[in-house]
Image 1 (cartoon, rainbow, N blue to C red):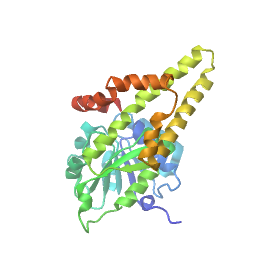
Image 2 (cartoon, rainbow, N blue to C red):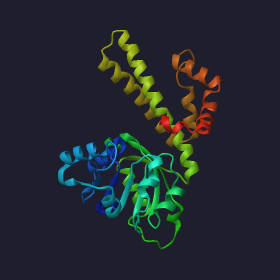
Image 3 (cartoon, rainbow, N blue to C red):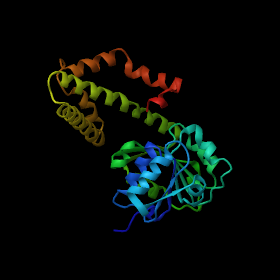
Image 4 (cartoon, one colour):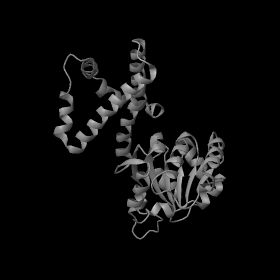
Length: 282
């Protein structure tokens, strides 16, 4: 079986913080890692620490480089910087036609990115740190520049999606607005983890060993989420039937009823979007 197209491209990661590191490790350990050393930037924040550590672990599979070198040499440039830094790192940079610029800056629109990185092609994405373990669920949308016929590109849309599949599963949003809407679903991550930890502590207080408590609540939640994924893939009817599971007197049903009855699920999304503070909660 032929290697995916992204594997033959020069991949560069600009900004090797927690997420940049996770993407690098996930790509290095996937079934079809790049054949060329991944360029890792060494400028800014925690980036030097992570890049140096990855270099020690993966040796010749990575190359530490300045931001300028990563920008100039990468065929697939992955921007792992905060939204307010995107314009700064791309200021006065002359990208070339054929380059693919992938941004993971949550609130930076692909429409804006396409203007800044022209003549390169822009991709906006929302990956998860679990990309390190190839279990990310990544939202992706392409800039309007991808619709330009006969434009030279190192990868086509399908091949870009194959790159994201190296980190897990992928959902293709049609535009910025749809990606913003879908991205709101990611807000559950912190609250869900906090809920699981509170359940673990509750079990610990009842004498259950910490490790067994953590394994129990996490595996139970995983089973529930797996059921939800299967139902969503099967159809609307099966998804609706999830609400009928469990007895009315169970604690989870009572909590769900209270939150639903108070309008929590209806009020929360517009509140976050109106205040734009939801980006900090992801």
